[in-house]
Length: 185
Image 1: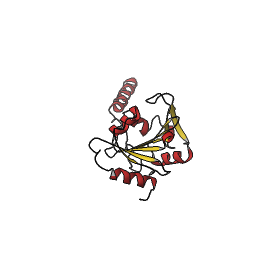
Image 2: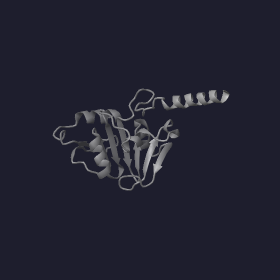
Image 3: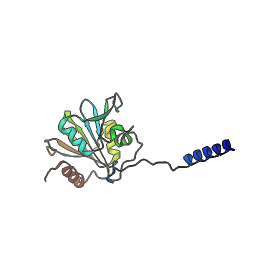
Image 4: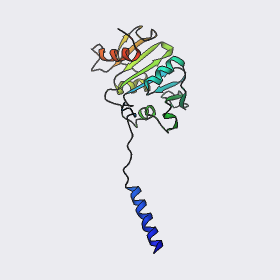
């Protein structure tokens, strides 16, 4: 009888575990801020990728991040990819930037991205995942609006546009870029 009782308890425990709801990927931080609405890449000798704007700004100031995950030769052109991590990310197996770059997490509708090319002193700004993804993989920007010397350190800012938006000045993207970098215009 005792063995039957133990077997029934074990079966009940196992079935309870198998019917537990599956956890879904969380696309927000504890402060209810979306983690899939922006990405930042700094191209130097490596491809440095950030989903956290503050961490990106610190990297731009110091050239280092306290925590990172490195993948040698994993970039679209064989470059080393370095994901900047927040303190909370360092113990996790992945982070939102990796998830988005691998296609495991969809970008938000109001997606925003910057790609900094230090060698050419340019900052490319994107408001479309499709144009951002194409640029990262192929370095193609068919439609653009360039603002020479408009970056925080005098960089040329290139707003990469879609065919649909190519005939308009990217006023909203410019506003978002200037606000993010604290540029008064």
